[in-house]
Length: 612
Image (cartoon, rainbow, N blue to C red):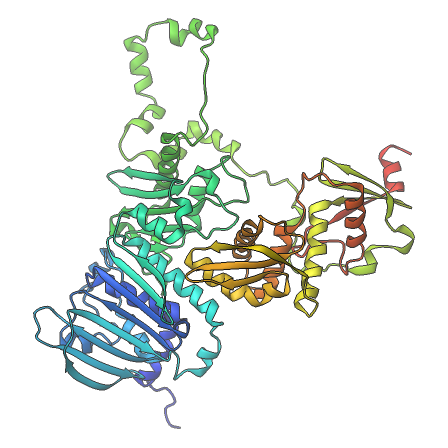
């Protein structure tokens, strides 16, 4: 029997490995931009065509490469940054594993031009399917230009799995922002299909944040700055009024590398505790600088997930730094204490602090915990403090809320929920707390949540609209314009066709600007911009859930955003229409997100409560 195990050819091995690093056009954009930063560039230009599927090109004015280096750069694990294993634990550059260019060359047609300042000519290299097709000298300015064309041309199955151009362009915008945010001292530009998306001049960190996230943040940023011998934290957080319903404007960087960390995000949320609504998310752009030996950035192919040697210290510092910043700028709530006369008579105030008492206090473990250096993370371990943790332990006995039920729990729909002999009686309706409606039935009553009920009604109405029954549009007498930051503008372009069915008539008008020609009849004039901005925020909130289609997320977002809110007083006629519309729905008992629209109370159950 012949041997059956054999080595894969290099080009196939490279394609398999490329799948780890280059998952979509945005992955290549990230790697090429980071290489340009590592090359010491002060100007970096990104150009994409067809959302990166046809072309991704990055041009920089960095130090360039020699002819030999340019050729070696496309070999797997060829790197200028690692010489021995110890180097892995003191990395300060963006790239280091030597996988990016090799992976790109395995799945695209690549053209590289590069020249060092000391060389008379540069080098031009053309690579396809990991093979060098052409190499020749070329006249060019100092720096590097790398263009990758026809991504996944040799792996058609991977190309077929790419999303729409609008969706892929959003991912590219996200990666561009993450790199550009880290380096405000570098000029960045981004052009898509010949149209400029970003033009970011060199400036301060605050200027770069405002350039990217919009002028609305210009006067609403609070600086964060804390320095210790272990780590430094700096950056900005948004004032509480800038909090949104989505995590979109949240950026964490460790040693200038963008990371995703639910753990550190929790620290930020804790710092904002009781200052923003529980379902809102603060804006922040925070940078952590610490010794590379204290973290491991090599735990994930995209290097967006890292491990800290001591997570508790980092968590505590992040939370403390933000609380300090908010307090310093009089944003966090303050406590005013009036001097109570009875306090003056206490021993601690009236009696002198003798030497005996001083030595007794200084010898306690509590005093040592707060006076010795590098002891902050040992506070919990002191036995006399352990009982304080009981106040913060989650109560395991609390029942699970309705919204936390398993997603696969079967739901009964339609007529099964409304017995023909127990139909709602809409002649007498009562509103409680401007949030609930009592609807009498022959066997008891329904307690209807007005916002949840309206969500269900709108959701089914919108679902019919996108399936071929468009909602009537109210033309604007004086069309308004809405300007969005680049990521939201790309998102809105992706949703335009479905929004037309839902009563919105929007037309692109220059760079990141749209003209609102018409809106659904139930959106009041003058409120169009707010309605669209809130819809986008809600859409991004749903975007983290991959099981929903683009259209489904749009329907849910609009239903949630346009529904009548709890706390709104309704007239008798409005309540009657709401209840009739609800019980005419195909699924009247819950919202699209699984929240109940009403609860049923039967007369016999009420009698039992009163012992009858």
